[in-house]
Image 1 (cartoon, rainbow, N blue to C red):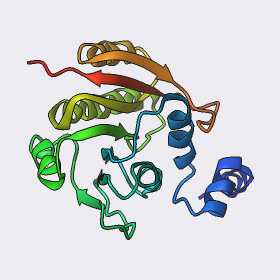
Image 2: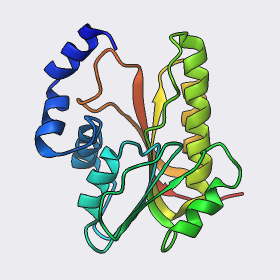
Image 3: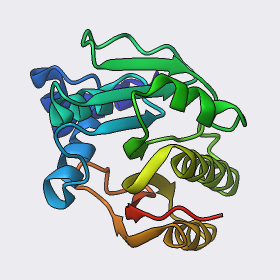
Amino acid sequence: MPKSWVRERKRDLYYRLAKRHGFRSRAAYKLKQIQKKYRIISSGDVVVDLGAAPGGWMQVARELVGEGGFVLGVDLREVTPLGYENTATIKADVTEPDTPKRILDALPRKADVVLSDLAPNVSGIWELDHVRQIELAEAALKIARGVLKPGGNVLIKVFQGELMDGLVRKVKRHFRRVKLVKPKASRSRSAEIYVLGFGFEESD
């Protein structure tokens, strides 16, 4: 790992905040900032977190849903348990056709919110990375359609590029209101942005 990268990370405000407040990743502050502005998660909600490792978003979601809610993390990697009875994780590939059923089987009821911070292993070839990330975003949308209750919300990371508008159009077909948001905790040079969909509407 380059020393310059390590030095930059240690200077990063949100990295330092995460370390100070016990969050597993600086990404926790992205969700916190989106929640503060848009209130996508409520007390008592059932939340699915796709691409959950190492668990920063799960920690934030668990704070928001409280004792009466439930948070399920899904990732290809093992996620160290948070230590709460109302949190759980499953090891799964979001692109596999049986994953929506596996998620539903692990939930107490259909989800109120689906979160996706999924990203591919970056190759450094922008066109390839963009395509791979949009494929993951589409997989997240498909899962959301399968596990959300009517009226539920979705938050999906995308990489900005020529394929993004197509993904946004697909989200608009299934949610009553859609916004693009970039929290302050996202690095300014990052191409990531989040598609936020409110009010899931079931359709064929």
